[in-house]
Image (tube, rainbow, N blue to C red; front, side):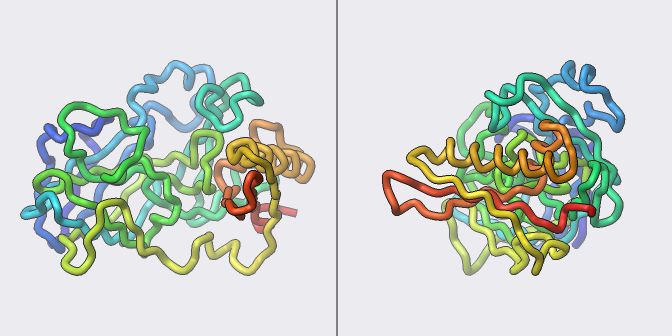
Length: 309
């Protein structure tokens, strides 16, 4: 059976006392409507001054809970991600208090993206391929009380794993009766790192098939993902790799991002803030080696295919 859950009611905390909005059978599919992460506070064309005034305590807007009849603690839910549909727009910001380069950026910055099918050309000189996914998808926690949504955990939550695209399957451990799945914080695109603090934040619909797994048992999130770990539009084309080594992984990662920002600025003439947003949308930070102690290596991968020449 197929179900539909709208985004007319959202919540912004994990709380296993919340009543389920819908109950489905194991094996049913459901289309879940998701507000953007700001809980519909950000609107297309909003100024950065108005953006600074939004209620940041409402980040992340979640739709749910969805009860899966019969799911019990100790079970594993199999969540097949079938389809995403964006609404044609997204926003992205630099938050100087929360971004990865807080020493480099001292003020907020806001950018609006128009999403056209599978691409966006809303940044000068840049053509982004979209690969929508849920930044937050999880089951209610076993602990009683209200919990902020920013930290992920064994229940899933704010994992920001960009490979939760259509065609992937997520397995999560059930911690409370009926599982109580919630989803939100959809991103139209994001690099591994989400360095500015945002991917392309977008209202979106996701279609899932949810089952009590009969052959897989997990205690932490596990994803069976598609073979295309980058958008198909980037496949088979060159990447610019910015390599940074040293004893501190965070500093290495920051230096790789700074070099990518500098390259983007020089390549297409963007401001530092714009280039930082591009990095947050598409730059993939990866651990290249952790065995050559005391020095470790982080590499930032930037696809050549994003540049409009």
